[in-house]
Image (cartoon, each protein chain N blue to C red):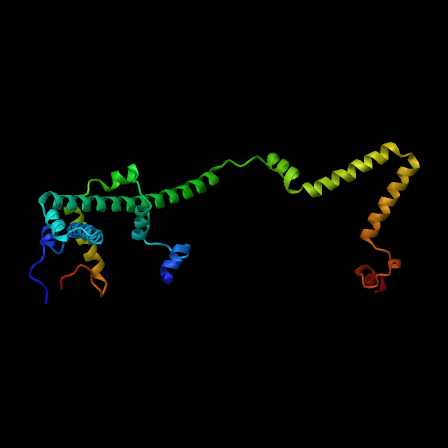
Length: 175
Length: 70
């Protein structure tokens, strides 16, 4: 059977079943009481001291502060979420709003970056051809031209002597 | 440690607002100026009213009621 003698701290701190702040104050009191018991403090003296009006007020104030800090922490969480969303949206708008370069600048960028390999090979070939044209005599230049023409013709119409009996060109000739 | 708390620790499952707020306080939280303005002055009366409204709303569509005398 429950003892009829108990301290009135709950009644002092919690005014009704809807007094949530009072319940938090009572939790703070109970945590302190537990610490006091663990430290070996005389619990009757502790309770007598805590039942004083100024101590009860102190618990209520602490509860209000705890509620306040908790609500502020929740608010900061929501603020952070909204800030992150705003940053994402602003970044999207900024990227969309950036001015696009005119066609000649984009061509220059494409020439210098995107197709650098292909364009580089073309220019290397052109420079080699210029050197041959400048340094070689007329006969050698003519030979180079003939050789290049022959290569291009071979690519367009491969010779049947090459032995590729399955090529499309050979089939056409056979037909 | 439950699977729920394990997933939340690993960041696989998102923590609730209460858990996030609690984590902040446990780490030694200092409220921002904006949060102070948003929350304003909190009194026991205001908090009790807020909790009553919140618990009524929670109990509306749940079988297990909280802070309910019935």
